[in-house]
Amino acid sequence: MTKSLGCQPSVLATVHGGFSSPCLATPNASVSGTIGAPGREPAMAPRSRLGSPMPRGLLLGMILCIGLPLPAAADTTKVLSADSSNHFEVRPSLIGYTGDSSGYFGKRTWGGKRGYVKWTSWTPNRAQAVGTVWVKTCSPTCSDGSWRMRKGSADLWAPKNGRFTRMTIDYKTPSGRILSDARKLGRIPSSDFSDGYWIWRIVGA
Image (tube, rainbow, N blue to C red):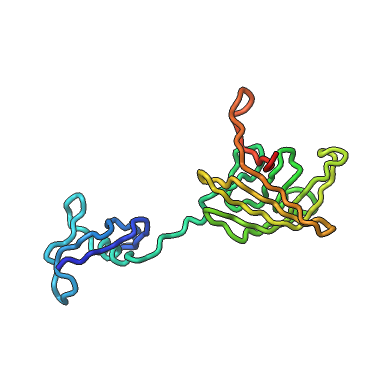
């Protein structure tokens, strides 16, 4: 009797001896022999590529992996966490999204008040968070201005080559007005002065 086995190659199946191995069977692989008859051995044991009999534990692991869902690649896409750099992260605690260091989202590592960030979701296609938006007044200049902290949110989407390419930072002013800062990932090519880096461009600028 021939029984058809299906298997998902990327799922790890645990075999005897505590060894974990990927499912090696291809979809709809056939195992020849009598299956299900009590007290009887298969007429022919499955063999590995090297010609030796396939371990029973490995065969059992292949059978057990049938129908298991593939693991979700939830944390594969990264975000540029520091403008004008090559620093990409998953679920960063702080994102600097302006080239003049006047805008941040998340928990600061300096100052008396630090703020916070909470990533509510992170998938390969989209990530969302709530947290503190830090905006510098730039008055009289950005270097001499003061910081304002606002409750806000971050929305990342449009992944490409493992990087989120779009970002929107929303926050509310003391008067209740909602401000939205839309950004698009851009690349500054290498030159005689640098090896190139990534930036958050203002959408529409």
